[in-house]
Length: 350
Image (tube, rainbow, N blue to C red):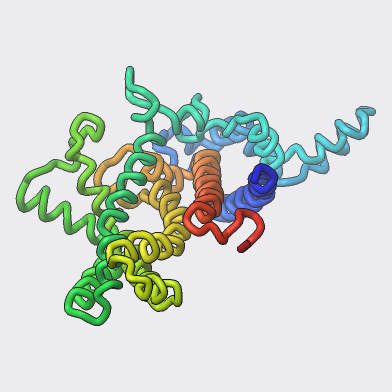
């Protein structure tokens, strides 16, 4: 088990490298730069832009710096220093700082490091109220709501296959899954903020009133819960056709015991497979919903960073998403062993 975990964690390193490389290339291939869209009018001066590029290292080549290597070689530097000069580009310098735990300076929040902006909380507030903590809490809350809605709905539909209950549940799940989350957000804002005037989505302090979390969490949860319901229904129907279910009924076991000991437990395996990546997606992929409901999280920060070409912030948030997805998949593999004893982590089925 320990060896398997170590191997999986080590495999995350090349995965993260590929994610960072692709993101880096796409960012710099996009027209424009951090100073072109800056709200500071002074950055329109070419001399100011040149000074900012030097200060942030944006005047260097993207990957390799043969001129610096030639200068180091002409100055009689040793081979290691020449190699360091050759890789003295934007990508190499970013990776070197990343290896030291430094996510770099933010181009939008001048004079501040990226990790400080992400972990920033209101004055005097604890870390869990930071941008990162706010998004994590919203994603986890949305997943809990999705499970509470989706799994019982799918279980009942599967147990009552081809009945009115099943058809009604399937209709609700299809509608919930087919409507995009941002459309649901607009609908909820219109109903509860504009029509009923129960809330003001522009003035909520999400850590002062728990009711403020209801609409954004429900908006995120409904499509995910609908998919969980459909997945659970299919899994329940498949499990009910297995030989061990018929054997359990033949032994005279009570229906409730068969459902909870055999059907529910084995039906959860494909659901757990979906929950891992879905949770990571809810945590870091809620930028549209955060913008709609004025939630001060990293999703909203991600959108603002793309608009402002804040390269280091975009890379940092992409890394966070990749790490969360990788660990979510690892957690899914571990949970498999508890749900199905036939599955051995790292070694397939027994």
